[in-house]
Length: 119
Length: 112
Image (cartoon, rainbow over all chains, first blue to last red; front, side, top):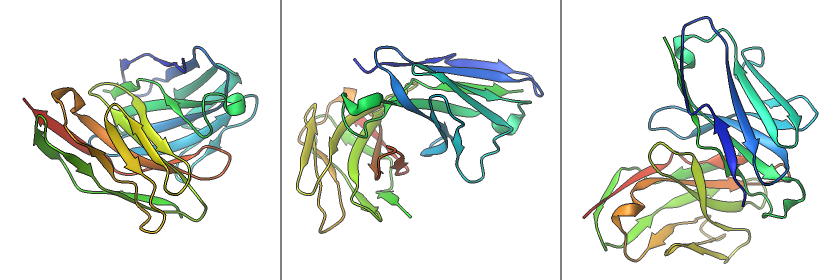
């Protein structure tokens, strides 16, 4: 149990285009989903926290108009990188926690990540 | 604010060697502590956790004990395997929103 699917695993796009990344909880309902960015050989940087049906909470320094997050259902959150530029190239990872904490209090379950390369 | 400090890496060991990866933390509240592992090209997987002082988390031969007096959560394994080669992240969480604060991670390479 507690599987989080992230798609696509890798995307290459031209500068100026927008890219959408999906994060799905396959076997549980996720009250809260998190989006992280990971630079090479560095830790995960939390970008935003999203709760189903409400606006995402962005961390300081993260442009909300650049990184659009939608959490329309208890099993799906999307991150859209708008007008991507080479500096947006990174590894993006989502995670989810279960409503009610049946799987364990405060446990985040992670997707496999999306490698974004902007040319 | 909350922070997690991990020892500098990378770490290279021979198979069957003893492993210790140090982790200390600073938190304003009473945190839960975690170790996550990231295998090459994959997302993070929860390795083990501890939610209160003196708790010992264990999984797959790895152990870590929540030490409130030293604010530490060091990861240990008595005999590492080549398959343990990965990046290990120490993390903490405080509050009901499950927000995690990660350490920088350390790369472990185990030689046959």
